[in-house]
Amino acid sequence: MIFTEILGTGSYTPKKVLKNDDLSEFVETNNEWIYSRTGIEERHISTGESTLDLAYEASTRAISAAKINKNEIDLIIVATVTSDYAFPGVANLLQAKLDIKGITAFDINAACSGFIYALQIVDKMIKGGGFKKALIVGSETLTRLTDWSDRNTCVLFGDGAGAMIIGESKENKIVDIITGSQGDVDMLLYCKNPELKDPIINHISRQDHIHMKGAEVFKFATRIMPYTVTSLMERNNITKDDLNCIIAHQANKRIIDKSAKDLKIDMEKMYLNINKYGNTSAASVPIAIDEAVKTGFLKKGDKFITVAFGGGLTWGGAYIEF
Ligand code: UT7
Image 1 (cartoon, protein in one colour):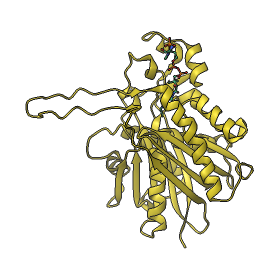
Image 2 (cartoon, rainbow, N blue to C red; image 1 turned 90 degrees about the vertical axis):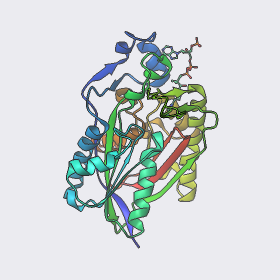
Image 3 (spheres, protein in one colour; image 1 turned 30 degrees about the vertical axis):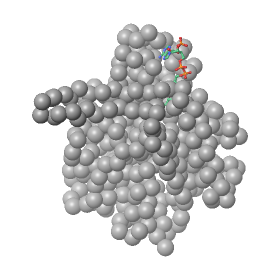
């Protein structure tokens, strides 16, 4: 029987930091509103680094944390909604930048749940016997899709990348992963590509921005996160007392507070770093896991659930022994 485990983690965020007060220079907002409604104090903004650049920095850190040779990697998956090119994918460009020859590499898009989806795919591909060591990355330059005149959304997002090396294992460490999707007929959260009318006549290529019905997404998030965590606990015959911590998608501290309350899990078990990064979409979960490792919040042997939700609408969760 082939099992899987996390061999190493890494993350990277661009240097430029935008504080809440900086935002009040171009939209009608203030630190008090942003912090009390979201828990965000600042976010990192790319001023030139691409999604690939962020992914590369996070990946080299994960490779060195895993203490492997990069040439042992036989699979790369990048989860992103902000690919630098329509094609090739960020994963293919990352493969080239890391100088790894002739392996499988591709991108996936499941918005903020993308990293959990990528984890599920590599887990199955390794357990299926075809691959031994995978690099998975969540990398986003979400601020390029941000409407900087819309105070409802521009205060929420940031840029960054997180990476993980997943390898074959003799022990069952990545125990269970679930994902799901509910087609967003009400268009609660989206960013449209240029419309295809008559492409020869209409050379329209204006980039759309993020649109969100915040309160509706909030309701979905506070329902789906506890549901996902509960499903994982039930499927694996464990209770909250068996878990050392929960590492949730960092979209809004109030969503994490409410989920913890409904799950009757102490907030001390919920990892939080949204104050520093805002919502970094597919990068949020791997950045949080990497920081939890670096700060000692998540230790070797700890059991945890990581959980996310996002555009799609999508969700996903994983029960892991670190
Ligand atoms: O990865 C998944 C992505 N998305 C999410 O997870 C978002 C989920 N939703 C949320 O986090 C929250 O709904 C928000 C943080 C987006 C908004 O918080 P809210 O408590 O739901 O506020 P609201 O949208 O109901 O707005 C309340 C008021 C409104 O003013 P009026 O109509 O009551 O006069 C807004 O116009 O706050 C106003 N407002 C702001 N005021 C100052 C909205 N944005 C701002 C702002 N600064 N940035």
